[in-house]
Image (tube, rainbow, N blue to C red; front, side, top):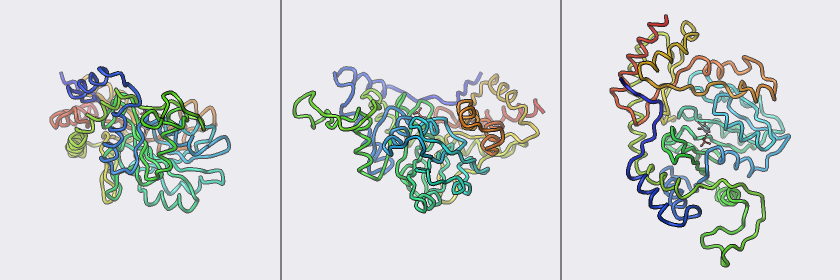
Length: 382
Ligand SMILES: *Cc1c(COP(=O)(O)O)cnc(C)c1O
């Protein structure tokens, strides 16, 4: 039987040897590899500055920590995203102010942002949902008008471009994830990119306890340093960075295969009745094809779990992005008293979608199998 997993990292001897190399040396943190990974990542995205971190969540949190947010502040957050996008605001005591999604892409509904801005708003965050870029021109004009900081959650958008410039470089910072099922992995890991040197330099300190001297080169006397600010321990280790360096060598190939799989899947899915697909790459918006999200129409959406189980029995792994709109997760619902249907489009996506895999671990033949199996599954539940 087929075994099509939703996501599977592609790890071979190059990553394994690179990890062994690290372990054969005493330097496991603060070494040359995290620096090299930053440089290579900056080269890949054309980012002026890149700061390696322990996760995308750490990158998002450090951004708000850098901004000095606290109770009473507000940040615009998309309702349809990973909970980390909102948690990062919560960590600081500030309040995430959720904005619903647009129907065509699931991205933040830009037309609703201005009505949510108050004198307490400090930043706009957004996610390039499933790799499809948000129209950053429109976001930046709102940000300029109200003098707001812009945070791009790029956890699903490695390789995605707006007006031919990589996502993450349109706002003030971009935060990437190297969690195993993302476009490339370091096991756990993240990266913050920015065009602003001052942000990069400050966040480099805040990721490492707020010490004033790095290990490499800056400490004239070993072990001697001062601490002039608070900081977390959000560094990326040499082991993780070594994996990242190897993955970056393959990332063009990964992205190419994703695109081909996505396109093959699109052709097949278009022939299936009862489902709607999101808009993908068009004009200035170049997607990075994280997955193919299928929205079940009203006639069959109540049968979603049956369809998912059917696919699973036939060896097709799926996922849900994301299982609930963030304001509908218990933590947020209880804390802020959100009610059902407060974010109807985002909730609709969570309640009626199935995410199908297009990762580079899969072939064109797998795409055909997914289409045929979904066709049968929908016929079965009708
Ligand atoms: C995966 C994901 C995150 C979290 O990334 P980590 O590296 O696991 O912290 C944040 N935002 C989005 C949109 C994600 O998909």
